[in-house]
Image 1 (cartoon, rainbow, N blue to C red):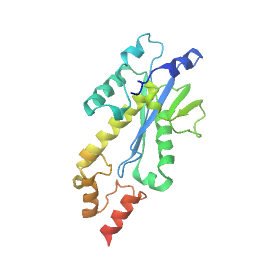
Image 2: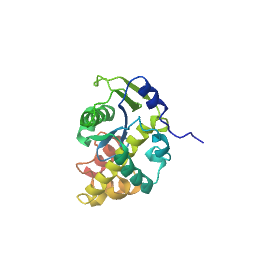
Image 3: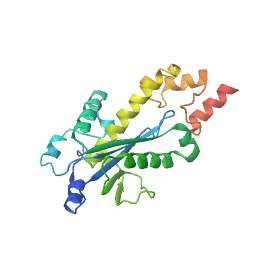
Image 4: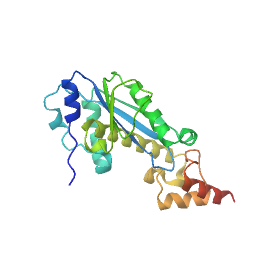
Length: 213
């Protein structure tokens, strides 16, 4: 059984004088369609019972949709600052998904109402940001700030894809959120891709080529 994320890293940095520590994570890197969405979250680390208040917060993938929506509202209410950034499918195709994720994260940082002193990032390093940072795998399982960012990014992206379902109903984006489900594959085979699809992704390429033949 995996341990729950904590504020250990954040509080250690706070004791070193970093008052504003931002956790960053993304959603949608593996999807066939839609943007990559990144989020940044800064919690008030001087609140004594903050860790207890955040008890139960997990990586977004380990929460139900209902739990994610509940935590989304709680995080927005408790955080000093939250922000999101996104890279559309066209940018993913142009510069690759890793670079597009960095762009989205940089947007999120730049949109924060408070300038962070330190960044905790899931997996990626941001060489374009002149801030001290710690990047480590499975950061959403270790840091509550990163877990919170994972929830903000996931819920934001899911809501965007549900909305885009109204424009492109053939792909059932309201259910699959752009990921490669069997129904999504069938829709691509039947009608081909839409402007939200990432044509650089091999499964989409294969299905697109079949659709135009």
